[in-house]
Image (tube, helix red, strand yellow):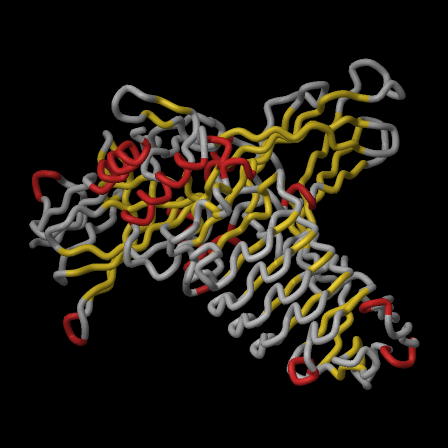
Length: 554
């Protein structure tokens, strides 16, 4: 197997790109008058083997001539401190300052670089906000021409890009948007032949009813509105946890406006992918049909004459690496590629992963592919084929997965049960998100002393001692009625420090640990100032929580 060799070769090739030069200043990018200390750059998009030419082409492999990126450089200290800002343009295959712009200069022996695309939007964001903390919010909403949708393809560097004066400067920008195409698959038979749609708009609004910010996006199309017409838009990435509402509105000619809710799809979408959503237009509603996914970034051309359409690893958002289990032939291949990743990224403080695909390539001999690695965050939400986390799978002892730096884990949506002692004594774990877990068994998280947040919206059964010893736990989310809470699932001391988030209608908890005890009355656990909800060690004494908050499912 030559997987890791191919991985190293690709990454090494990317790292060797770029030129630097070094000691005069010049305004115009005139090759005959190039300053000795001018900063020469090269730039790529996404992972080392995928770049972009246009957001309307899925298999683009190079930047387009005339593309401009806004680059900032800082370095030095005190009176020798340097801060430079300029726009570099791709011209004749090389990056040089755009007309009227300066080269960045090596006025310090070590400079840190940040880059943003497109340069025009970056300048608008800087002028409006004074910094780039809200860069993604500046995605243009009018994208109805090729030129306009290209400006919506926001990208930026996300990791620190620091280089010594004698090093090549290679800037890697990451997509900050998601490519979405909605296709009119069919009209129901209530419509006349040749019916067409118009006024197609994408609407994003906050899930928080107290926030009224709503944006309307105009898509790019070359269609006439009939069957097979398509509408393409670049939308800002939104994580599932901070999900906003996404709808598409359109109007069959001569009819009332129709709307389809795409929110549930939007929460699972990944940056760098192209999603095609098929719509069937009915008389009173839009029906969401098949959703297909393709790779927006380029096909990989790998060394040794081997080519594959997709790589096991690709770049996601905010420093997250995507692991696609379905692109590997077996567990060992995923493990080997991850080993190569950790060699190349040695010394990084965080290693965040989003895993997608079948669990068949995730487990072997009781361990996951992350066993004995430095992973700090693992999102398994989109892993399929697993319904239960086995006993002791992620425990802090030698029998569990040795992921000693793991701080955050999101369990697969298909998992409904977490087994006994599955995470026991995992002392660095801080956040656990269980989208569809119904049962947490005995002593599952006991001794997880750093655990601060537990999101388990659908949990119904909490077995004996499942959170015992989790002294740092401060926030617990329960959206459904609890039918069983075992003795010492939470201790009285823990409850006094925990903010419990529950549904307003959740007024009653049935107590049946070992078929003992009874049913609490609404008075006992009413969500009011008494903050009582649940039971203590002896199945009769109620727990008094620090605070009980009503939450709205939206």
